[in-house]
Length: 267
Image (cartoon, rainbow, N blue to C red; front, top):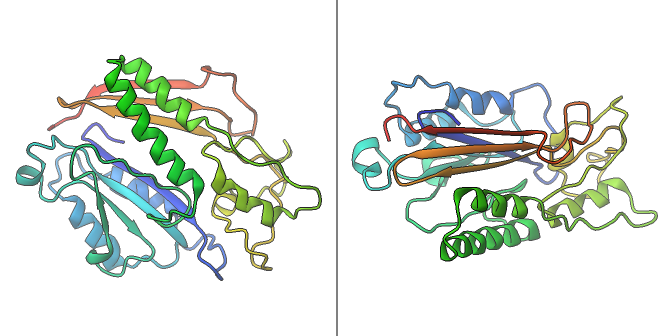
């Protein structure tokens, strides 16, 4: 997220019958290219979506990119061109294929390592419900910002990952990741021959020779939890909690917390 209110989040997934694409195009570069747009630029979210589609989205693999510029809903349409946040994916062949979110107050949406709108993932359905219920309860109870952050962190910490069954192959077990919002550390502390987090997170669990890998060669799990709150005047709180460091070691609760408070420029 930038101080101008630009926000971007990319999740990956593996399309059925396709291999992971490594080294052709960087998903991180797609996110950074948006966040590094000049603060003075008047380019709209729709402009960026069209540009991404025109450039071509092949060579990245399955992904969904949620992005946009957070602005005062009362003036968003008339001042900034277009409304809401966009989701562009590798399946977007034209601007008509872009999903637009947060155009009206009270919307709640969930996105994970599958295409947007996939309700076959329990973590997506349940996560969306828990966030919506939590926000309503927080408002009804007139809770503080800190209490709301704690509520949302509780949602992000729900661990319902089933244990691996005896004799269950790893590529099949990885399908269980869709059942839990939080993924506790799985694997070993040895980082030798570690598979990428993209490979694990995007696994569809299909028993195919194109999806055979063992996540025990390195630790995989939820590394960071992020809560972003923006009020009606543009005052923003960006809270990030790190659970696992780059070496795969768990960080004690609250020791990996970072918080930034600022007002969005041009709100």
